[in-house]
Image (tube, rainbow, N blue to C red; front, side, top):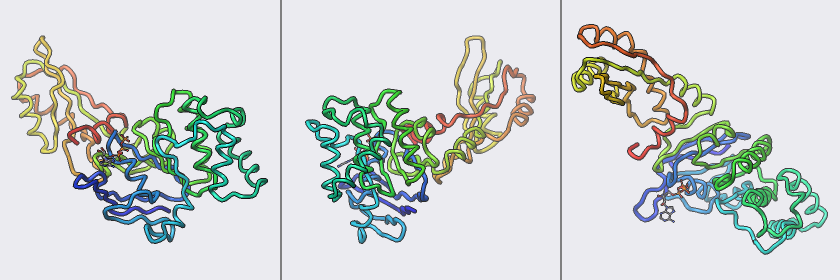
Length: 326
Ligand SMILES: Nc1ncnc2c1ncn2[C@@H]1O[C@H](COP(=O)(O)OP(=O)(O)OP(=O)(O)O)[C@@H](O)[C@H]1O
């Protein structure tokens, strides 16, 4: 179990990670999802002990950073965003070198480990190839084998699929899923579908803060339940319509999406609740206000052309939680 509490990191006076708390259970695959610059790498580097937090605590099982940093580091395999490989070496020689510096001195033990890793990461056909000649996807697999060399209990992967083509992404994803059957994995990504396809749990961060944290299944379920009401009207003035709609409920967020030439106004009506708790999207179901809207509009001489409720996809929720002004 990994427990992170109120983790904060300042670079001089810039707060890159702001009071993050999260819990990762044994055997879970956690996706740390966020746009560029959200603070993912900084968070992962604090978890690996590479960066010292400005404040907050990291506990892994009964061990505490920084007191037990050496023991914690021995539990973790880390794949940084750009895997630091020696490009002039053959894959086998490189892995042999990594194994030696990790203290696997016995030749037979090293050989057995290479066989396991080669199998797991799909390296058998490239063991005798120079790393420089490998595609980015294959280099990433060698990086994964490096991170897995000592069979760590926890694997931390920083954007492992970044820059890969769709086939390579699927291959790395499959390897991560296989490894995830036995290990706890935390990996960062800025691609929602990536986290959705691989992770048991997703923590979304934006500007250094956690903006959502839940199981992937719950996030999807909540997104499906979160709805917008689409309304199109004829014969109304825009400002009058907005003020009437906002009068229905104090939390309503009314956006004009179209103002057609044929006198039709279209609106998207959601919930403007901007509370900053981790699951604020949970509150944003635009309730089913269709009858209230209908009854209010009935008091006017406007014509309802369309009034329907639409579920939002997880993608929309992610964009909402991580857009610039969020
Ligand atoms: N060494 C540093 N000194 C100063 N600022 C930094 C440093 N490293 C990162 N930052 C800033 O901290 C913020 C978070 O960066 P970080 O690399 O952790 O984000 P990220 O989510 O991993 O982004 P990316 O996906 O682009 O790698 C960014 O605004 C970045 O510019």
